[in-house]
Image (cartoon, rainbow, N blue to C red; front, side):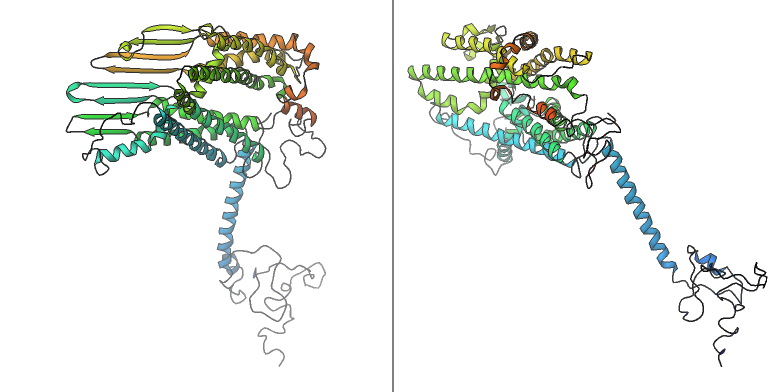
Length: 587
């Protein structure tokens, strides 16, 4: 019985439902049958019936149809209901497709952000935190220095012969005692706040005897320099080493955005930490209260600027320079020359002055003060060093202002200026000689390997104004850094104040010194440049010389549509790397 298993006839009969070919129809062959097709269509079923092992295949090469269309393809009795099993993978495939679309969208968004110069923010955030931690370490060094000075000072015992209160308000078990301990632990935060253009304010309430307030504003420059230098150097390092690829791809826009956010976050944390760790003591029995802290709006914006600005400049310094960079390269090199000028003058003068003063103190029998002087270098050393470039201009004095009832504290009232010739002769003579020599030295640095695009008006203007503007701007920053002032108001003494700093016309004098260096570099340095050993001056423009030696493929971005041999064209990147962050998007 060969047809027992085929209720509708032989399995090869084309008239049976589900046969390999459609039912009898008039076709082009004239026999009423459709011609055989090597790729049969889905027919009425639209999908194969699972479990069929004999007869022609029901599979179709056409895309799978939905279960609804498959079940309604043919009426009974010919319609075979499609099983519901294959519908389950359809939902899973849809979820996977949605996830794939989301991943593709995120990838496209990341690529678009990298193209405009916005890359990974985590390295910039980490550097901001690192800069603040380094500042706290420098503050600890200042505190240790102050303790050592107190231990070596010839003042008897450290408590001045007084007794330490033993009541509950001053003991650790009392609330006031714990607040005092927290204040001592928080001293590094207070010093970092003071180094960020904050003011250290103290309020003392003596009950029946009245009250007193005091405000100190002055930057411990060791802390300030440590924080700024860490932010700048670390940002430049990560931009140069990881400026492209997964951990970088930040251009100018990304550097500006992430540096600003990093500085803002550090400033918020610094304000909270400084306020929480304020030094406070209260004694209700005596009516005594003392509160000291440096949290305020000034330190908030100061911390923000001292973190964000060095981060941004460090990123920019580490970016690949564009093709037009040589036209304005002097604007970046001029502040470095101003800094070199200040240091090459101040360091030898500072060493000579420290040696001369120390010898004089030892001769006068005050050797113990020499030890205290050197132990306190972390406190005053950089501030004194920063004031020397002002005196080295020979037209800028130190400004000393004492007002109010300062006579009660042994200080003469007055508004005086300390010029270089007011110093002892063995100090001001070397100061003047070094000050006259330094413009010639830095002019040789400025001239060596300098290139000026003579055919470009922008390059010509920049080459003339870069140094004067840099000297002016750097001296204005110096003026703000070294300014120190103290104000106090006491009930019985009245109001008094003391301020020390450079004269306010310092930036104007510095502007003309920068112009003098520019003139010497153009019209004097070329005649003696051949006699200067390269090891003394070649280091200043080393990066520019390296870019020229490389032929600019790795330092200047090639023009649109052209790429050097072996280098990816603009907008492309080596295989396995994200596109490099451009200096300016679209340039």
